[in-house]
Length: 375
Image (cartoon, rainbow, N blue to C red; front, side, top):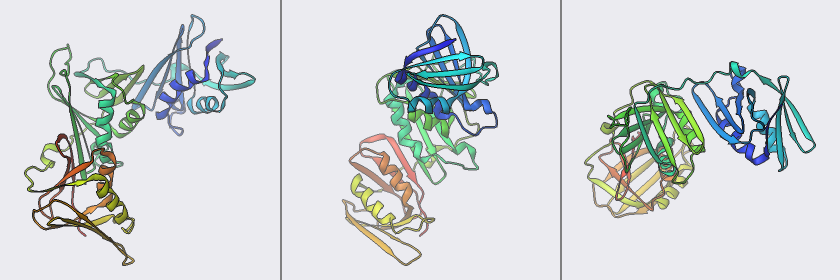
């Protein structure tokens, strides 16, 4: 029975969208498969790892009947990638899926669609907000690098999303640094029955954030974000992504962001980035510390390692505040400078034991806090 007949690229696109979350080694072997459902000409492709579920559609079905099956995602993807351009046909016969293109032919094992564990979608969403894909992608890009990776405080292994009226905020921290980015929308977030909603805060898992960054485009097409008690749903460009939320209480980021620092200077972002990259060469692998000495019109950055080697850089700047001597993990500074696109950055400091605040001049929507380290 023929399921699909279309060009190779037409089939490859939806498969690449859904196969990002498929894990090769899973306790449930069927999770290495993707669920293909055909209803007339509409074919949906679905993958899940129990925490996240991605669905996309393509108009490439053959015939009017409805059928569903599951097949190994990676194998199907690898076969299609290796094929030359041209038409591809998928057909199902006696629990085997045949992939055919020209004189190439592959027979793959299938597993029953009924055994595939799809994620139950929430029946009620507390809030819904719509914003351009490029705006949402920008929000994620500005904070994702500050998420923890495998912290025992599991609520840090993700990103806090705050929806408050017309404002959408993203926050990430690993306990050593914190990144905050906010955007103001034209319309307010809608509540359950379409009315106004109270402030909503959810923690989205790290894997979901990385997947969204892969899938979102730099365009003005909308992405709809719907928040439920234990689930978030993103709908954009023929893609639907459902993810579980991380339970737990995210740190109060408003208290972490310093206010009223009087020692501040603006500096060329690229010059600072390059000076830090050079200084980082002679830091110890485990101990990525650089020392920053700030004096009138001058910033001196230095590093040493266990072999008594040292690096030193001097940058001129317009500064007339207190003389300071403060250490930082250079990776945390380079992460933020690599993600910002502005020509200049503003650095605000309290004393040698206080965290530093990095912002963009004339822009209140981004803040990055980094803790000092003893050197």
